[in-house]
Image (cartoon, rainbow, N blue to C red; front, side):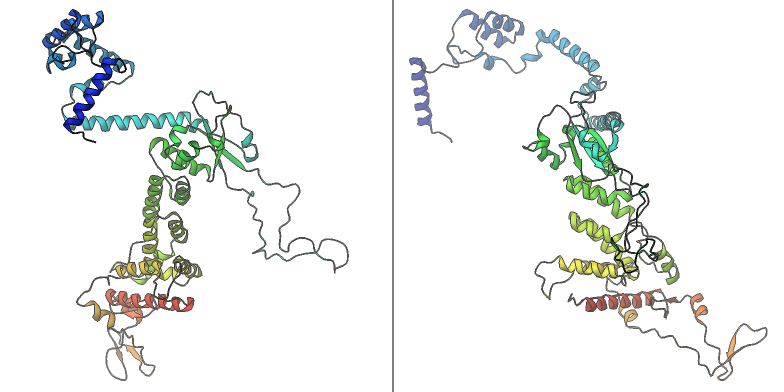
Length: 512
């Protein structure tokens, strides 16, 4: 609030009255003592030595003279560069050099001398940041990863790690390994072995236990489940919003205890190690087989940057043979590429993108499916995926489209180069390629020494066979027919795949 002139004068007058009455202490009292006047004169001259002597004698630096000037107001702007400061500057520079040696900051002195050049300063900062990260990475591996240990899961809660430890850890994170049945799969489905009766008694007896269950020998036992414990530091875990909320609330994990608390994390030890490496060192070396698990764990712990890095790994390393059909690629080579194993389960990738709200994975999965649609279109899992995409729209109406199918259609048109309107593309799509079969009534003969076959009935050159047409540059479509060239084949394949999509929608009774 800005006061007017009369209001400001009235407030100053009231303050002056309170000071005279003794109810308010004057912050800047009037001082005409010789020591204070000497201090003011030294401030005018910029004599630092005389100022220090007067302050030592007890002169009040907050007082004012008869002209309402304080000593700080009387100091000239260039007084700090006067002749009396050379000794002080030397002390400061000596202190900086001593401090740089004590803290092992070798580049501190060079940074002060070269502070005017921005390029050198920026390069120096980049080098120092990289050096600091390398040092922190080495410290993390020697003090965290080196001290991790594996124990039986049922004994993890009994671990006693004293809070006063050499690595300053203040919490233990627990990651359980996957259940190991020692190579034995206990399932009723898929057991084709005939059941044999090996007990005495009447044949009409009622069998006990589920049919098809695999019996276990008493001498065999499952391996105990293992868990890995990581001694970590709360200060680094606070980069995760999950742990930040946990440690700043009244939860049990936030309470101080004599021994370190064990906090379980719902992921495997390998995934937890990737997460801790990112939190400590900002590095994320994620393998493709762990990428989806890291994505879910990062989403659970609310680490958005790690989620983005995992999504990039899936959408790049998981691309595999996603490249679309090139003009020179025939159906045979395309079929051979489809027979290669997929680097990722694209159904799991798409569902992970839905659950973790990563749009990048949704686009990647749609492009992946579009470029290999002939491989997935007839699978029941693909139909279930379409149903899931349709059910994601709450209160879906008949006019609502299916997001996954819209994306697949878009990338399918890109695959067959039909996305852009070309002058000759409509003619290719409307062209009906018909392959005529040779008539049974016509027979062909090959004259000895001639390279060309003739039809006996018409005395005309015989029609080429399918192999000859393929060798002549023609290609087969997805339904096995012969097409004139690659562009005609692409147009027919596009129509076939779009027709299969429409047939799938009719079978699922979906309007899209």
